Image (tube, rainbow, N blue to C red):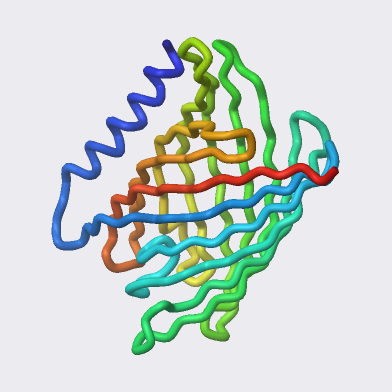
Length: 219
C-alpha cells in the first residue's frame, strides 16, 4: 500500500504539472516495440524501435532503432552498452542522430517488496554531424502485484538530464506505468510521461507510451 501511495504521489506531481497547460505543451503518443533475447543468465540482447515527436528533439516526427547488450554482473548490478540511430520521418524536416550509450543500473530490494533501480546513463551523440554528450540519472520504484492468478508490475520513475550543448540539467521526466503479461513471451507496457525541458519547444510534453515487449530465450 505504501508503494501504491508513492506511485500515486508521483502521478499527482505529473498531473499537477500537466494542469499548467499552455501553448508550450503538447500531448503525444510514443509507440515502441522491444525485443529481449536471453542468451544465458549473464548475457542478454535488447533491440527496440519507436516513433515519437518530442522525446529527443523538436523534430515534428522522428523514429529510432537500437541494438544493445546487457550484462548481469550480479543480482544487484547490470551493465548495458548499445547503439541507436534516430531519423526524421518528415521529408522536409531532415534529422539524423547516431548515439552510443552506456548504462550502469543498481538494483536494490527495499521494504514492502519494492525494487529500487538507480540507473546512470551516458550518451555520446552525433546529431546532424555535431557531437555532444548527455548524462541521465533515473530513480525507479517497481513492485509486483497479483489478483488471483493474474500478476502485473507497477512502477514510477523520475529522471534528470544533463546536456553538454547547454552545460546544464535542462530536462526532467516523470513516468508512472504498469506492465501486464499477455502471453508466455509477450507483455504490454503502458505508461504516462510528463517531460519538461528548458531548451526545447514545446517546453512540456504529456505522453502516453505503449510498448510491446517480446522476450525470447536462446536454447
